[in-house]
Length: 167
Image (tube, rainbow, N blue to C red; front, side, top):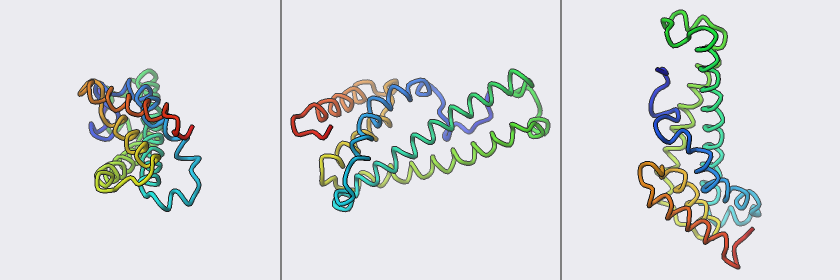
């Protein structure tokens, strides 16, 4: 079993759903937010907050996949998970694992802080609202609450298909 702390790395049933959820949620809104003029970001702070959260999420996902690949390689080549911690740390790749671990923890904390802040912010633009929905779509795991996840994803699709939507 992996020694990665449960809360910071993708674990459980949602690991395989990150890409699908990202496509449904953040990936569909991120290009809109990135294309927004700077003046709109000044007007609606939700745009900046959501853009930042989505960027942190993308980095977290990329590092989590790298961590999984690296651990699998170490297990395959060195029987890593059966080694005592002292011997694990001697392997050159173990340093990268530790660095990734530290960064995943930092990203997780920052994402949680932003996630707690977002409900207190008022979206004053369509993009701010779409950004908040994108974050919600990613955070609501389909295995834990399929109805809520699908509802949020459908709102994002409806939002994008509106004649006045930014595309």
